[in-house]
Image 1: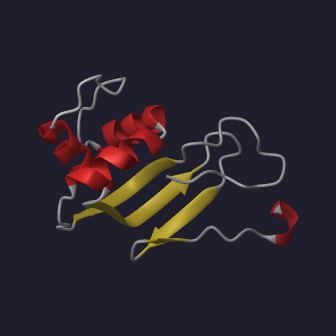
Image 2: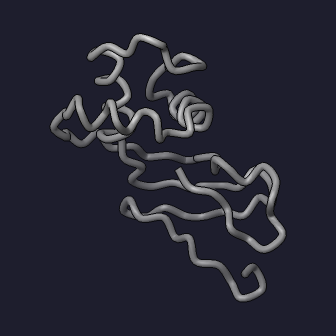
Length: 114
């Protein structure tokens, strides 16, 4: 998940809203130790919001106290195996559109936006 870096855009710039999404599921080997370390580094509210908006998974509003393997596999499926292939990422603050083509977001800004 990325944030907007347009000059003067400082509010409501994370997470970027995803529209016209074409998703791709890519199989990635599950590593429970890695997922246990990663879960504390996820901006959970933004992660849940994005997963819900994409219709990928219904995740709880907060990380459960007792994290089991099944829960880690759900997080793995969303974070590691779901790829945004095509679409647009839009800033809720300034409405700047970042196109995504072949899985690569174009985050370049015009001179006036930097």
